[in-house]
Image 1: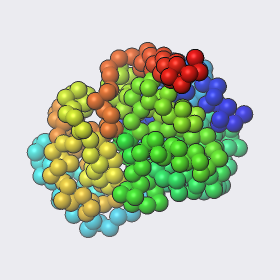
Image 2: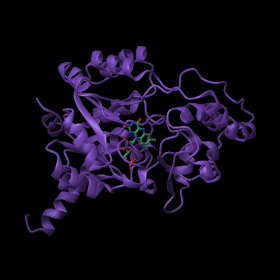
Image 3: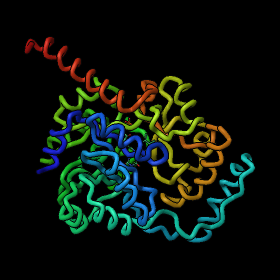
Length: 358
Ligand SMILES: Cc1cc2nc3c(=O)[nH]c(=O)nc-3n(C[C@H](O)[C@H](O)[C@H](O)COP(=O)(O)O)c2cc1C
């Protein structure tokens, strides 16, 4: 077996993007049932809960399952930096009547322990973002029977993953919603569109490519397959589905989105991410480069975002979404995946006609 064979063997070559804050096992199971590849979002999952999470999805699904982790270094910020970040956030907490958090002693789950738990859980595929694994880490996963996929925002990042022996690359175009995976260069130098990135990574690296960013329906799926991708990874397209855990104010903001509604910000988490612009993003823009790096700022704004969601306030919530969010549709995820594949087939038929093949 190879990753290419796994992806070629999927009845529908659609991979559900893992989405912290918007997806749990039920979305992955729905996508798997439709014939795509569901991905369990494990980045925020404590290591000792990973086995049960993977086992739970397996019990509901006969087919392959993917998992996803963020590659986080242990954060050990200076106390003064945390104080300064909290002081900057205090007016926002005050507006919601929510208490300012204490100094956390941990900012993100222990990545090494999460990785060890994933090795033990033996999913069919494990994808990673925010960095690159070591060759030994890649081999540990492969020896357990897990294909390793690295997220790349640039050709250089795809090459870095190839060098450590990854089985495939998930290219994340600039259009993509949520956090940027970039780990080699600044975000400004890592914003390549999905079309250009897919084609240039395929030309540079001899590995199967999963294309992500701005794919909202079957036309987008057909487009990246035509470029040579083995599968399309879709995130924003699932945000309004019944199985997504997208909060009510977030769903409403998507439904009300104006034209060209998304921007990049690092104000919420300390790492650039794309979302619908709101008041927090606008008013924090002057301090954008001053906030502590991920995962520190992310941890410090977590209670704020939870309080905003509970209050139904979209202005202090991270509303992650990709550039094509206006095309997001509500409905059952399993039905939508099947519909998108029907649309991709229709796109292929009309292309065959246009090119004189049929
Ligand atoms: C709400 C949201 C959360 C995301 N969380 C993750 C995540 O946990 N891990 C990850 O690798 N990518 C994450 N992403 C990025 C996706 O993997 C993917 O790159 C992106 O959704 C593709 O672009 P699209 O949103 O236009 O489909 C997230 C994206 C969104 C929209």
